[in-house]
Image 1: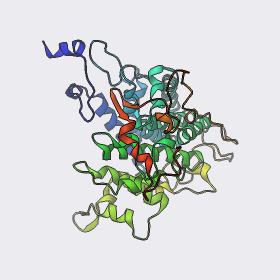
Image 2 (image 1 turned 120 degrees about the horizontal axis):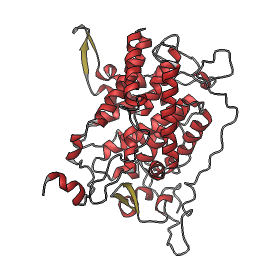
Image 3 (image 1 turned 60 degrees about the horizontal axis):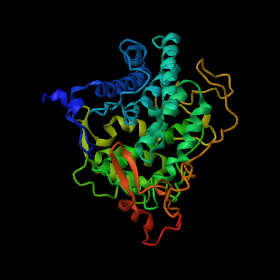
Image 4 (image 1 turned 60 degrees about the vertical axis):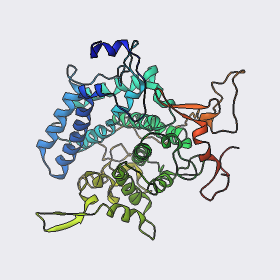
Length: 426
């Protein structure tokens, strides 16, 4: 049989931790990831270095990848992460691949505020058209909506995409509702009292997936800051926060996995929560060592040379309780951008892209606390279990990959002190 014939003839089986080598024939995803980083880097350079050429580069990348209807990404993912075999189809897992849109939205906000001539009203309107079309697909199509029902990182990144895109189109109320829906819904089941993440812990690369989901949580908390609400100390059903999960992560033996994925998370925790008396966060970052810069004349900690240190620097995530509404996405970007309102705060400093001010937070309909919503009279239930497992013994993490109650039930049995958790519903 010819190799290509297997694509439509042979059934494909999902194996956690293994990637189909056929993916190496496709370059779109890697190009999108590199382009999104270039877009945000050039947008920042346009204000940090006062470089109009950088704004032009960022705008041209946005043209090619989103605005140009012939070359750009279609505003749907019907064939995202295609599952080959006799019945080829797209998978809801493809939505995860556009998580980089949060960077893209950040970049566009910076281009808007800088009022560069390269980001014209025409370009902005075309980008808005793309974003609205993609949002419609995410919120109305079966494939687009499916990640919202996931218990793991797919749901976290899905909500982050939605919130960021709603910010882009000026729907601040809708964005806030999405952030609140995540923290009052999926988030409540994602961290147990010890700080473990049950739906990431059974993967072939558990350290990576724990950090991966935390990346999405932190992004959503930052979006909350931007929208005027603090989610950093929001607790799960088991009285844990984002900090609890980060503190737990850095105590683990990662085995053969790369622990560098935890560094941006630790930096974010140090910026938001501060360090303890033992300087645990600082020491974790400094354990990576030093390197020389300025032609060998200066020695600095390695983590301070990373691009993510700019985003996770204490000054970049500092939030003023009295001035949420006028906090810029990047406080360090420039003196002109510090405190500049990205949304209309009711003052005379509104910019032309501002959305109407919102006086009341929206109510959130949370279905996560009602695990029986799809139950039938004949379906056995387990009311003593956490909601995702009330109606089933297995929860899907990705297509063909599951976590079983028998694998993780022990995580709910005891608190870090060795006693039965008083927070689990027993």
